[in-house]
Amino acid sequence: MKNLKNIGTVLLAFILVLGAFIAPNLFGASVNSDIPFASVALNRLGEKELLKNFRHDNTFMQSLTSKNSWVNNDIIDLTEIGVDPSVLINNTTYPISVTARTDDSTPVKLKKFDTTNTKVTDDELYALPYDKIGSVQEQHRLTLEEVTAMYGLHSLAPAENGANTPVLETTGADDGTGRKRLVSKDVIALKAAFDKLKIPSANRVLVLSSIHASDLLIEDLNFAQRYQNTTAGVIAINFYGFKVYEHGYNPVYDGTSLEKKAYGATGASTDRNASTAFYAPHAVKATGSAKRYLRKAEDNPETRESVMGYRLYHIVLPMRTLGTGALIDGKVA
Image (tube, rainbow, N blue to C red; front, side, top):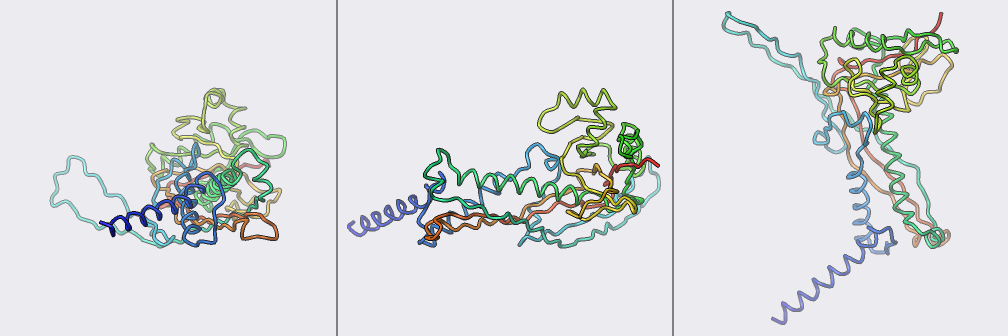
């Protein structure tokens, strides 16, 4: 019995000590990082919180199919499915033909996104009436959400106009700069191009650039009425067959070749602003590992400041290029 009591006492002491390490982190307080176990445990909590809250709420990203289960060691095994089967109507010929479906599987490394570090001094924490550490962590998460969405939208836009990837120019009136405005008939033309490719009518998504959204507000009263009644970033439930979102970032196409420019490429006066369309079931997103980098103020006797940054692995890709398209600025001759 005495031995059992001793074991119980030791176990209780361990639980109390562990709680002393973990509980303060949940409320943004500092923790003695001299104990490696506590430091690692708290970093893991920070990383889990980032992944738990990484949701891209109220953006086009919510329409994408999540394939986190396909990720292993920050590599996604991306499978492009083969051709669809034919459908026989009132068939009288037997045996029915048999074909194999050949899928192409390609391992793709997730993109690595690093935030720059943010410092918080002990003097700030002493003077502030709110949890600045928690606020900084949330800011890093929101920034990662925004940048991964921007990079993802760029990835979904087709590289150029092709047989399976329509990239159509806008045809509206000159906006005063030599750019032709986007008009409703341009969206109808994109719909017709998707129809011709036999892309299913349900789950088509159109992400309008801000300038193209403004064009439609000027030109289309019906669109304007839906836009004014919208909430949470969704402009219209169905606009000529597309579920429509607006995003502040848009891919850019070269003004001469009409090819998509690299993400973050230097801008030029001849660039073509683009809105992006895709068939949602063919577009996937995946989140890999997350890591929080943290150096606490007590480890910085000279500056007495904590420094924090994050790394996240993430990707957005079309499983098939068929079903992606774009509307780019037309130019006045």
